[in-house]
Length: 146
Length: 448
Image 1 (cartoon, each protein chain N blue to C red):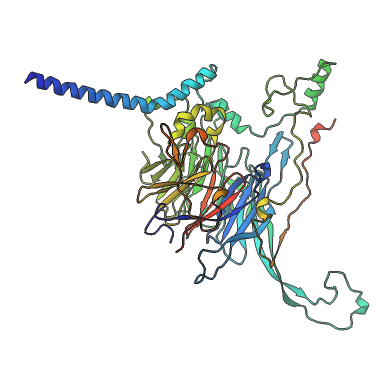
Image 2 (cartoon, rainbow over the protein chains, first blue to last red):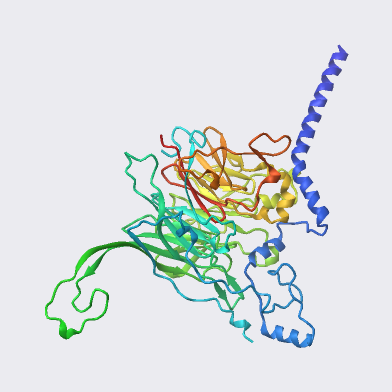
């Protein structure tokens, strides 16, 4: 009798264990990935959703250029080259002063979308496409004029 | 009928058309950034990174004879937004069209709202098929006639001409957003609309461009305390006083404009409780909601986060009523997806006309449909390989691990540069528009 009982309780236990390991396995992919990331970047901050991450998102498009800073830096450096950007051109950090060379080239002239042209999009033959608001405004960065 | 009798799987989806260039070298301006059918489904608008809008119109086929529904062909195209530079703030303003929303049709012309990061524009698209001829003082080509040669008077008459479709900007709603606009939504009153940026939501009247009301402001007094941003917002389809906005922390807030002028205090907060033992570095990032859409009925809303689609009943705030996994196999790839920034991709989602099926995009130019009634799902691919009209699309399957069966594709072979972020479903029929990076695919169900 007691043997039977103990056999039953053994089965229960293994059942629980099974569930436990299954749950752990479900968690493991994300945690394993997290471990991988921390191994690669040990200095990664604790709060990924914190203000640093969001501030970067909010600052998209910000391009700083101060001609005063630029000229002061140039004067200080005298003959030396100004530090140029690293691989990430969009981040302006620390002592890096943006130079005219850093900023991306002017965007090319505006042309018709390929969705509206080409063999795959056949406009109706009896129709003429006309857009009223074609302006020739360009993007000029006056601040860079020295 | 959209979704009637069956769902995403009883329907056999066939290739119909593909728009855009074939070449692999994609110009940045050609990247499609939004796709939207109008209220009747007759028009389909796309916006791209170059600030251009292209509108397609469905051809009116002879329904008795046709084997398929009308094709979509180019109706109008125009430059909606141009690149700008805000000198005061040293901000480059992209011309990329973030959203297009159609107004319901009130007269012969069509109206849509298109927005980039900072400025919303109301465009009027109208047809001209007649022109006046027989002026007394002008020649037909516009040159003025010498008045002394005019000996008789006649009344100019309207004569038919080749159809011309003109797009003109009717209102420009500018200077109301410090941060980047992510959503616009037209109210069911058809007079007002909202625009949402990362921290604020503004209410506009379609006729008034020089002012707007701020209805939500989550900017903290100290920016160091910033913990979440607004990711999407939408008005309720029937209740003109109700709107929702989603956040980067995975919550949705429903607000009632009758409660107060500034809706900083939500009426309802929808949030699924998180299991603390499951929390990881990635938890918050993948819970960020990239899109929120009300069902046509107004009873439900759908949210899209990085790995799943959730359906919420507006009457129940503590958890979604349905959750569908879009690409769960990516959970074990989060590290590399974080490194290549894919984890921040913003996928959209959409309902079919009868709210029985929902659709969203994934990687490798795959898109997914979930039938809410049968609980079945399907994965399809937008590819030029199947581009014979009326070719039925073959369901695709991703093999997460272990032995890969024939026709399956392994997770490591997925192309993460081929993302389908934008999809749209015709409001009445089983016709869908799926945007890959620079091509627009149109699929429809097999009409027997």
